[in-house]
Amino acid sequence: MRDYREFLQEILIDPHTLQARIAELGAEISRDYADSGGNLILLCILRGGVVFLVDLMRHITIPHMLDFMAISSYGVGKRESNGNVRLTMDLSTNIRGKDVLIVEDIIDSGYTIASVIELLQTRQPRSLKVCALLDKVERREANVPIHYRGFVIPNKFVFGYGLDIDEYYRNLPFIGVVDLEKYQPE
Ligand code: IMP
Ligand code: MG
Image 1: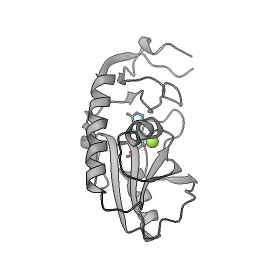
Image 2 (image 1 turned 180 degrees about the horizontal axis):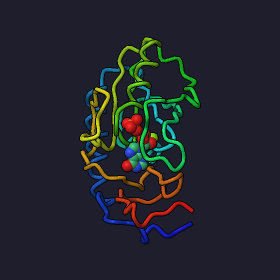
Image 3 (image 1 turned 120 degrees about the vertical axis):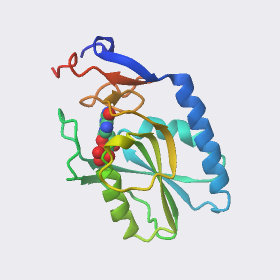
Image 4 (image 1 turned 90 degrees about the vertical axis):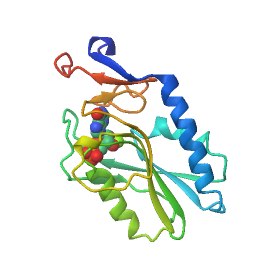
Protein backbone atom coordinates (compact mmCIF):
# COMPACT_ATOMS: atom_id res chain seq x y z
CA MET A 1 0.00 0.00 0.00
CA ARG A 2 1.43 3.32 -1.03
CA ASP A 3 2.35 6.01 1.48
CA TYR A 4 -0.27 8.75 1.28
CA ARG A 5 2.45 11.41 1.06
CA GLU A 6 3.06 10.34 -2.54
CA PHE A 7 -0.34 11.63 -3.64
CA LEU A 8 -1.34 14.11 -0.94
CA GLN A 9 -1.89 17.41 -2.72
CA GLU A 10 -2.67 19.39 0.41
CA ILE A 11 -4.12 19.02 3.88
CA LEU A 12 -7.50 20.67 3.56
CA ILE A 13 -8.60 20.39 7.21
CA ASP A 14 -6.08 19.70 9.97
CA PRO A 15 -6.88 17.63 13.08
CA HIS A 16 -7.22 20.60 15.40
CA THR A 17 -9.69 22.39 13.12
CA LEU A 18 -11.72 19.18 12.71
CA GLN A 19 -11.94 18.58 16.44
CA ALA A 20 -12.86 22.19 17.24
CA ARG A 21 -15.73 22.17 14.74
CA ILE A 22 -16.96 18.74 15.87
CA ALA A 23 -17.10 20.01 19.47
CA GLU A 24 -19.30 22.89 18.27
CA LEU A 25 -21.59 20.53 16.38
CA GLY A 26 -21.92 18.29 19.43
CA ALA A 27 -22.87 21.25 21.60
CA GLU A 28 -25.42 22.44 19.04
CA ILE A 29 -26.99 18.99 18.75
CA SER A 30 -27.12 18.66 22.55
CA ARG A 31 -29.01 21.96 22.80
CA ASP A 32 -31.39 21.23 19.91
CA TYR A 33 -32.36 17.78 21.18
CA ALA A 34 -32.43 18.67 24.88
CA ASP A 35 -36.15 17.89 25.02
CA SER A 36 -35.93 14.65 23.07
CA GLY A 37 -36.31 12.63 26.26
CA GLY A 38 -33.87 9.90 25.31
CA ASN A 39 -35.43 9.39 21.89
CA LEU A 40 -32.41 10.60 19.89
CA ILE A 41 -30.76 7.97 17.68
CA LEU A 42 -27.48 8.74 15.96
CA LEU A 43 -27.60 6.73 12.77
CA CYS A 44 -24.15 6.36 11.29
CA ILE A 45 -23.74 5.54 7.63
CA LEU A 46 -20.95 3.01 7.31
CA ARG A 47 -18.20 3.02 6.65
CA GLY A 48 -17.12 6.61 6.06
CA GLY A 49 -19.13 8.18 8.87
CA VAL A 50 -17.69 6.09 11.69
CA VAL A 51 -14.67 8.20 12.63
CA PHE A 52 -16.79 11.34 12.71
CA LEU A 53 -19.46 9.56 14.77
CA VAL A 54 -17.15 8.45 17.56
CA ASP A 55 -15.71 11.93 17.99
CA LEU A 56 -19.07 13.66 17.65
CA MET A 57 -20.91 11.45 20.15
CA ARG A 58 -18.40 12.30 22.87
CA HIS A 59 -19.48 15.93 22.57
CA ILE A 60 -23.17 15.07 22.84
CA THR A 61 -24.16 15.51 26.45
CA ILE A 62 -27.75 14.25 26.31
CA PRO A 63 -28.94 10.60 26.38
CA HIS A 64 -28.98 8.98 22.95
CA MET A 65 -28.78 5.65 21.17
CA LEU A 66 -26.62 4.53 18.28
CA ASP A 67 -27.29 2.50 15.21
CA PHE A 68 -25.61 1.82 11.89
CA MET A 69 -26.55 1.20 8.32
CA ALA A 70 -24.43 0.54 5.27
CA ILE A 71 -25.00 1.83 1.78
CA SER A 72 -23.07 1.14 -1.33
CA SER A 73 -22.96 3.72 -4.10
CA TYR A 74 -19.37 3.88 -5.34
CA GLY A 75 -17.74 0.71 -6.69
CA VAL A 76 -14.03 0.32 -5.90
CA GLY A 77 -12.08 2.47 -8.33
CA LYS A 78 -15.04 4.67 -9.17
CA ARG A 79 -15.18 8.27 -8.02
CA GLU A 80 -18.78 9.20 -8.73
CA SER A 81 -22.03 7.97 -7.30
CA ASN A 82 -24.59 7.34 -9.99
CA GLY A 83 -27.81 7.39 -8.04
CA ASN A 84 -27.96 3.60 -7.90
CA VAL A 85 -27.70 3.33 -4.15
CA ARG A 86 -27.92 -0.09 -2.52
CA LEU A 87 -28.71 -0.88 1.15
CA THR A 88 -26.09 -3.43 2.19
CA MET A 89 -26.83 -3.45 5.95
CA ASP A 90 -30.04 -2.28 7.57
CA LEU A 91 -30.26 -0.74 11.02
CA SER A 92 -31.64 -2.88 13.83
CA THR A 93 -33.58 -0.28 15.85
CA ASN A 94 -37.27 0.39 15.32
CA ILE A 95 -37.16 4.14 14.60
CA ARG A 96 -40.89 4.76 14.70
CA GLY A 97 -41.52 7.81 16.91
CA LYS A 98 -37.79 8.42 17.43
CA ASP A 99 -35.64 11.44 16.63
CA VAL A 100 -33.21 10.13 14.03
CA LEU A 101 -30.06 12.06 13.22
CA ILE A 102 -28.15 10.64 10.26
CA VAL A 103 -24.37 10.98 10.66
CA GLU A 104 -22.56 10.98 7.34
CA ASP A 105 -19.01 11.77 6.27
CA ILE A 106 -19.68 13.73 3.09
CA ILE A 107 -22.54 14.84 0.88
CA ASP A 108 -21.44 14.96 -2.74
CA SER A 109 -24.14 14.54 -5.42
CA GLY A 110 -26.61 13.97 -2.58
CA TYR A 111 -28.03 10.78 -4.11
CA THR A 112 -26.89 8.56 -1.24
CA ILE A 113 -28.45 10.63 1.50
CA ALA A 114 -31.59 11.30 -0.54
CA SER A 115 -32.26 7.59 -0.88
CA VAL A 116 -31.52 6.97 2.81
CA ILE A 117 -34.00 9.70 3.76
CA GLU A 118 -36.64 8.26 1.46
CA LEU A 119 -36.25 4.81 2.98
CA LEU A 120 -36.26 6.01 6.59
CA GLN A 121 -39.30 8.25 6.15
CA THR A 122 -41.40 5.18 5.40
CA ARG A 123 -40.62 3.95 8.95
CA GLN A 124 -42.23 7.03 10.52
CA PRO A 125 -39.59 8.54 12.79
CA ARG A 126 -40.75 11.53 14.84
CA SER A 127 -38.02 13.61 13.23
CA LEU A 128 -35.29 12.94 10.69
CA LYS A 129 -32.29 15.22 10.25
CA VAL A 130 -28.87 15.06 8.63
CA CYS A 131 -25.48 15.82 10.16
CA ALA A 132 -22.66 15.77 7.60
CA LEU A 133 -19.03 16.53 8.30
CA LEU A 134 -18.31 17.71 4.75
CA ASP A 135 -20.46 19.28 2.08
CA LYS A 136 -19.22 19.38 -1.52
CA VAL A 137 -21.90 21.86 -2.33
CA GLU A 138 -20.90 22.55 -5.98
CA ARG A 139 -21.55 18.92 -6.87
CA ARG A 140 -25.10 18.71 -5.56
CA GLU A 141 -27.64 17.12 -7.89
CA ALA A 142 -30.28 15.84 -5.44
CA ASN A 143 -31.94 18.45 -3.26
CA VAL A 144 -31.27 17.32 0.32
CA PRO A 145 -31.53 19.18 3.62
CA ILE A 146 -28.35 19.32 5.74
CA HIS A 147 -29.20 20.45 9.25
CA TYR A 148 -25.71 20.21 10.74
CA ARG A 149 -22.71 20.74 8.50
CA GLY A 150 -19.07 20.67 9.53
CA PHE A 151 -17.37 22.26 6.54
CA VAL A 152 -18.19 23.25 2.97
CA ILE A 153 -15.36 21.99 0.76
CA PRO A 154 -14.39 22.54 -2.88
CA ASN A 155 -15.01 20.01 -5.62
CA LYS A 156 -11.93 17.87 -4.96
CA PHE A 157 -11.54 14.21 -4.06
CA VAL A 158 -10.64 14.03 -0.38
CA PHE A 159 -9.51 11.28 1.98
CA GLY A 160 -8.72 10.62 5.65
CA TYR A 161 -10.80 10.92 8.81
CA GLY A 162 -13.14 8.12 7.70
CA LEU A 163 -13.06 8.85 3.98
CA ASP A 164 -11.33 6.25 1.87
CA ILE A 165 -9.54 5.91 -1.39
CA ASP A 166 -10.42 2.42 -2.57
CA GLU A 167 -11.12 1.46 1.09
CA TYR A 168 -7.75 2.60 2.52
CA TYR A 169 -6.50 5.66 4.42
CA ARG A 170 -9.61 6.08 6.58
CA ASN A 171 -7.42 6.21 9.69
CA LEU A 172 -5.62 9.47 8.88
CA PRO A 173 -6.48 12.24 11.38
CA PHE A 174 -6.90 15.00 8.76
CA ILE A 175 -8.87 15.61 5.56
CA GLY A 176 -6.45 15.58 2.62
CA VAL A 177 -6.89 16.27 -1.09
CA VAL A 178 -5.82 13.51 -3.49
CA ASP A 179 -3.65 14.44 -6.43
CA LEU A 180 -5.41 12.12 -8.88
CA GLU A 181 -2.51 12.38 -11.37
CA LYS A 182 -0.20 10.86 -8.78
CA TYR A 183 -2.64 8.29 -7.37
CA GLN A 184 -2.73 5.05 -9.33
CA PRO A 185 -4.72 2.12 -7.86
CA GLU A 186 -2.47 -0.93 -7.34
P1 IMP B 1 -23.17 11.10 -3.03
O1 IMP B 1 -24.21 10.06 -3.16
O2 IMP B 1 -22.64 11.54 -4.39
O3 IMP B 1 -23.58 12.29 -2.19
O4 IMP B 1 -21.91 10.42 -2.40
C1 IMP B 1 -21.76 10.29 -1.06
C2 IMP B 1 -20.76 9.20 -0.75
O5 IMP B 1 -19.69 9.16 -1.69
C3 IMP B 1 -20.09 9.50 0.57
O6 IMP B 1 -20.78 8.86 1.62
C4 IMP B 1 -18.70 8.96 0.39
O7 IMP B 1 -18.68 7.61 0.77
C5 IMP B 1 -18.43 9.05 -1.08
N1 IMP B 1 -17.61 10.22 -1.45
C6 IMP B 1 -18.03 11.35 -2.06
N2 IMP B 1 -17.03 12.22 -2.24
C7 IMP B 1 -15.93 11.63 -1.71
C8 IMP B 1 -14.56 12.04 -1.59
O8 IMP B 1 -14.12 13.14 -1.97
N3 IMP B 1 -13.72 11.15 -0.98
C9 IMP B 1 -14.15 9.93 -0.53
N4 IMP B 1 -15.42 9.51 -0.63
C10 IMP B 1 -16.30 10.36 -1.21
MG1 MG C 1 -19.84 7.28 2.81
